[in-house]
Length: 71
Image (cartoon, rainbow, N blue to C red; front, side, top):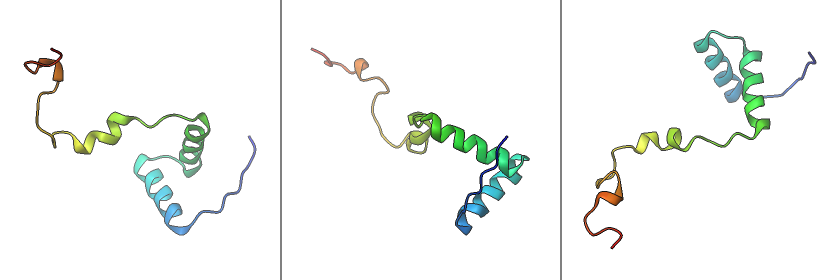
């Protein structure tokens, strides 16, 4: 394995250390996984991003059930 030195702002360093501690894993493991996700180009999960807005809007869950829809 090769080494990489990265300079982080203090706030990001703190977040990284806290996340690693919560998950019970090494900082390097967490950083590797985050870098792997970034270079893999994974698209963000829309359902996860929109989760906080669930239930804020009223109306039928499926517009095809509304009377007169599609006619």
